[in-house]
Length: 131
Image (cartoon, rainbow, N blue to C red; front, side, top):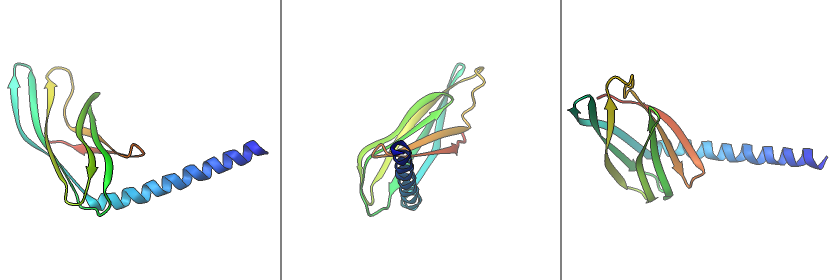
């Protein structure tokens, strides 16, 4: 009986936490402007280095702490943005370089991006890249 009650309470807590996180994410989507644009490439033998500009602008009123934006492409981890505090009007820009080796069957068409805030809320999205 106690175990069933504990499971029900845990399920309610998880459901409430997820709904709060979803509300926060919907609100954040209006406050964050994220862009990733190609700015050039270099070919060295069978390796192509593609350079992108990553830009994030925060327009929200509530400061966000421990904000991280990471990406994964073709099994490779790329740190995009890691800032201790985002406040209203903060613009973070950074250049990243993605290495592509011909003949490996790997094409840089999709970038899987994970955004985490306070290491609690995680958003995963896929962005189409053009080179």
